[in-house]
Image (cartoon, rainbow, N blue to C red; front, side, top):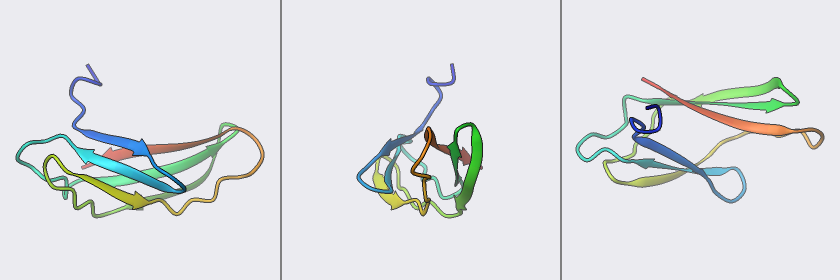
Length: 83
């Protein structure tokens, strides 16, 4: 069910950029904030948020996430959306 009701899609781009696609037909996502975190070897090492997402309905926007991933270990960039 979680995948079926998802209307904001995120994809990794080159460098530190991600693309955000708003699947809604009539509503922008200006009421949503993006929260990101970098997890290295199971430990959260960085976090931040983007307060304003100006993505119109059926549009894609690219943004840069200002993270510094450690060079050693297994690293993940986790993205969350909250209203």
